[in-house]
Length: 235
Ligand SMILES: N[C@@H](CCC(=O)N[C@@H](CS)C(=O)NCC(=O)O)C(=O)O
Picture 1: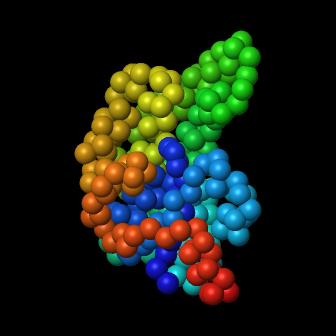
Picture 2: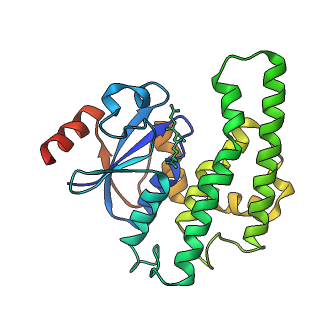
């Protein structure tokens, strides 16, 4: 069976997994999951019991969740193409380090800002939580600037799956109007460099239901019901 990526909209961190699938070039399908509606529904439970996106249905019908696990799964299968690295190599460690930083410090820095958007709160509470969130986002950007050390890409001399994941989260800064990214020149340059990438434009178009031109092997969308049917059949 061709893998299916369950991606969340709007503004999902699944964006990086879509870009990773495009870059690495294996055939895949997509299943669109609205948040918070469909993702919290009972129907989605068999896909991911913790009700989050992304999730990836594998060729054997088993489902893998967590961005880090999905990106490492994709990387491990595309070592020959240069997307993954030999387990005892420096680049293997570096990719894991960057993915871990992005998945914890960078991702979580935005949590207070999402909380303000997603919950009804007193204006004074909103102000305090938003200020806390902005401070966290600023700190995470400063840390990433240090980790980049003036390099063009997060891992090595070429773009990697960490850059794909970065792009999907870094855009939340624009959504929340948190910090001026230009304060962090290497992070800002990385973000801008990625905007011109065909897979980034594809992922954006998919999310916005615009005309999307694959440069990988995207084979189309399936509904959640169709995906569940395939998973049941494979069990
Ligand atoms: N640790 C998980 C976090 C996934 C996560 O929080 N996904 C969000 C979208 S970025 C989600 O599905 N939220 C559910 C909701 O909004 O109800 C991962 O890295 O994949």
